[in-house]
Amino acid sequence: MSWLPSLLTDTPESGYELAIKLSRMAVKKTQPDDDTRSKLRADYANNADSLTMVSNVVATNFQTVAQANNYWRD
Ligand code: HEM
Image (cartoon, rainbow, N blue to C red):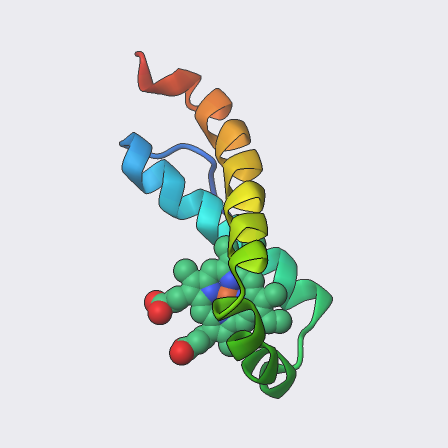
């Protein structure tokens, strides 16, 4: 099954979860090795600037998801 069957979500909150998923998938696809990602986890999880960058990436993806859902206005 596709990991991204649709950009449509029922609520803004589930849209935000999708934005996180998109962001994490980018990391997984660029670094497919599980052990390497596990090793690097502690670095970013304990670095304020890294966490701020994470937040920025998620915000960018959330823009796309929100637009695809017409900002849940319908
Ligand atoms: C865990 C988001 C970048 C490696 C997590 C979790 C979130 C998250 C929400 C917690 C999942 C949970 O406990 O249910 C993101 C986002 C990223 C990002 C949005 C980028 C925009 C990265 C990078 C790495 C990484 C760059 C390493 C190269 C991991 C690993 C875990 C994790 C190994 C699992 C930790 C555990 O199970 O204790 N990430 N992450 N992530 N992340 Fe990231």
